[in-house]
Amino acid sequence: MKLLVATTNSGKIREIGAILEGQVSEPCGLELLGLNDLQGVSQAEETGTTFEENALIKARHCYSLSGIDCVADDSGLEVEALSGRPGVFSARYGGPQATDQDRVSKML
Image (cartoon, rainbow, N blue to C red; front, top):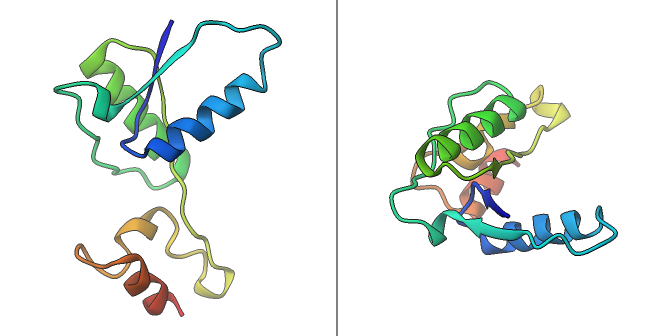
């Protein structure tokens, strides 16, 4: 059985694979694929207001393009001193060209 992980991050695919392996007692023949393994399957625009909404948007989008069962996640930083920001905007915090260091500096 194939399972598409809606990401281009190979580390995340390995992480999800390890989690799934820990949940089954016998090998199940699961083949994990990422977006880099498929042509014509792009990442979805994350327009949700919660991590859960964004994960659903990504999974549904990738399933609709590939026809392969799909799992997705979304995560970010919720800083109490910033009233929960940047939240779902963590990856875009600091602007479209911001590096990880730029985003950390802005948050601090």
